[in-house]
Image (cartoon, rainbow, N blue to C red; front, side):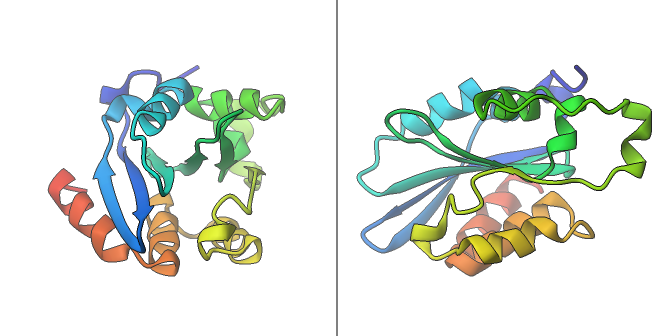
Length: 169
């Protein structure tokens, strides 16, 4: 698999928390972009009484939503074909018990991306499955733009923007 070293990846990882009606967004270490276990552990360690989830923009190619739960995390991968080239995308598919697509990496430009996982992962917070489907389905947008749409819809766009500005993204 390519892109295993977080130093080689563009993008960002943020933890989003909603407690008592307020959103907070904090940057996660870039190592969260390379492996699902690392990202899940960082989110579980937050120990919030409110909703906690992670948004990962990997190389501006795709995004991952991670929502830790006691038994196993709820996950959404915006582009299943990314699992051919990115370890974290393969980790997400593995966790969902879905095989990595059998597509030659040279043919990826000819294949339309598709999502895998739980489109309703944030529905209880105000982002219905139908809206998430539209966001994920807009393949003209970069991953950071899709994450921006999620943030705007849920009401933490300003908090996300402030963190991304500090990260230089």
